[in-house]
Each structure stands twice: as C-alpha cells, then as structure tokens.
Image (cartoon, rainbow, N blue to C red; front, side, top):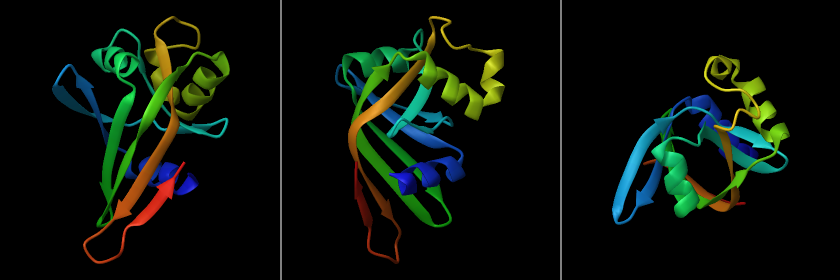
Length: 130
C-alpha cells in the first residue's frame, strides 16, 4: 500500500471517479493520506462527490507520472474520527483556510479494500492488493 500512496502523493493530482445513478463523474483531487493502515482521501460533506461516495462507495482513482499510470479500484467508507481529519489537515495545511477538524463538513473517506495496478507501455503491470 505504501507504493500506492507514494505514487499518488508524488503525482500531485489524481482523478477520482464516482457514479451517480447511471452517470460516471470524474474530477481532479490532490489530497491523499495513509492513516491507521488505510489509504484516505479528503473532501467536504456538502459536495456532490461525498454524497456519491456515501450512496455508492465503489470508486476508482487514476494518476499519471514519469511515463507510468496507476489505477486504484476499491470501496471506501467515511472515517468520522477527528484523528483522521487532523492527520489529513496536518499533511495539507493549506486546507486549513477551508476546513477544520470537527467542523461538520470535513470528510475523510478511507479505502476499506482495494487493488491497484501501476502500468506503463514498456513494463509488466505491478499489481497491489490492499
């Protein structure tokens, strides 16, 4: 899982896909954390993306860097612990202008399970289960 975290962290921007009814939605994200043994992302509960993940927790992430790409597929759950929020916000202090731990909006979604594939056009894929 550390390889997945490091790839996403160093890529800077990854793309998160959710589904609402039968329509996929993809948007750029930049927050990624490794907390309490889980890969985690952050958003606001008021956003459509949070509502979509609460309704259908199956998501996919994708990022590209240095001629390689990663696809992360899995199921997420809302981690309501203040410790998870604090850990994320310490890793991304610029978010402090928009959210605070316990503000009722800051949402940490952690992967319950997942799998990743790190791929390129010249090497065999690296597959990671977590």
